Image 1 (tube, rainbow, N blue to C red):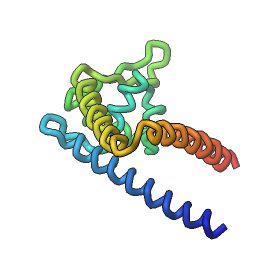
Image 2 (image 1 turned 45 degrees about the vertical axis):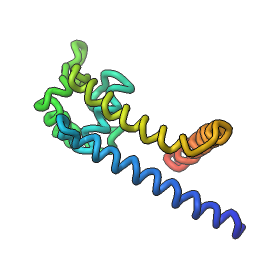
Image 3 (image 1 turned 135 degrees about the vertical axis):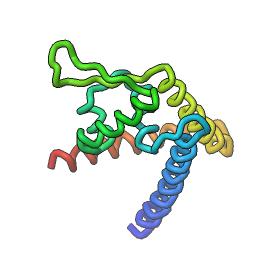
Image 4 (image 1 turned 90 degrees about the vertical axis):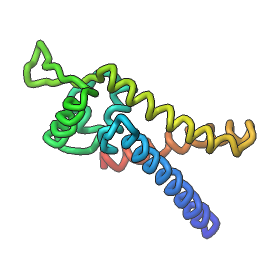
Length: 154
């Protein structure tokens, strides 16, 4: 068990370092010369690029904040020209948020910066090591999703 505990500690430290790099990248991407976005705003813009138009409630759940906090974030992004809101025709209480062309450009610039960081990380590995890392990462992600779902239900 000592060996497993040591590997857990090493793995945890490595993951923390990788997450810190992504947080720093989010900060750098969000403060690019034409963006001036908070980290939550850049996360939201990226999520909308990935998932498309979203309800305010779904955005709230994704960011892990209350709907009234999302309203403030959306207000800021709307004022900057990155998103637009539209009320549902079926239920006026439902508000959808979608990216504008400027919002898509911002999200794509951020995604490109992240892709470059990942490229830098993977370039240090052989092709076989890259394949192994991707395979193992998928297994870790799948098992962690299952564990978290168990904790949320319980």
